Length: 257
Image (cartoon, rainbow, N blue to C red; front, side):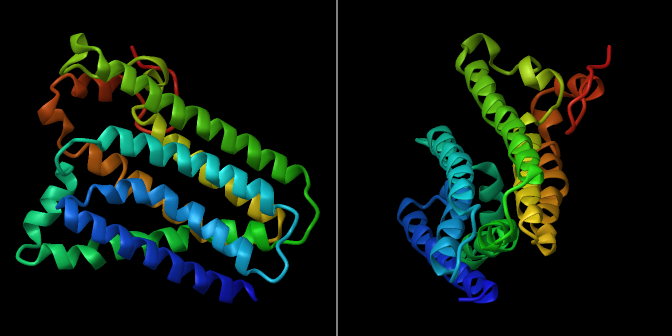
């Protein structure tokens, strides 16, 4: 099977996963479950490409391990974080704007849309798994960048979870650890993970897969990441304005005094 055929099979697999998860959301009357689905879509895409490609290359198993480690960790964290909570305010706002019949509309507005986004972003996985060139230095650089991303993403999530678990921190702004150097270490980590995977794909000859990390970067910086989260957080947490003044938004840097 060609790269294009495998990519199209990936789309079918992701849409099917989105459809099945939508059914769960209908039963729960809560679409927040799509957050847990999001990283798992990439694991599914990588597995699909490894199965469907006629001749998976030497990077297949390493890429599967990297994607599974990232995706399963993030999915588990999001499932734990959202367990027992009402629908996230982001999705509640989308629901209110799309009534009546949001239940049906969410199939394509939420689940189908995210499946298509994940399919487009997964291009480096397709390129890395399908590449036949020998593993080289650029692959090592890609893995190193992936590791930096995992430290920031997993470390940031862990530090924030500990901070929120302390009742004394209620209403306060997290500005310690990794959060001292960037207001969004988890998003920066995601950024590094996907550019690291792209470097592995580039080493495999898949320069054309750059659309994947570019799209992920736009989402993190301008759409569903930094911009969306900070749109009204200052109203809910007055201390955040000072945090913004002193701390880099995305890329880590020295704190301003």
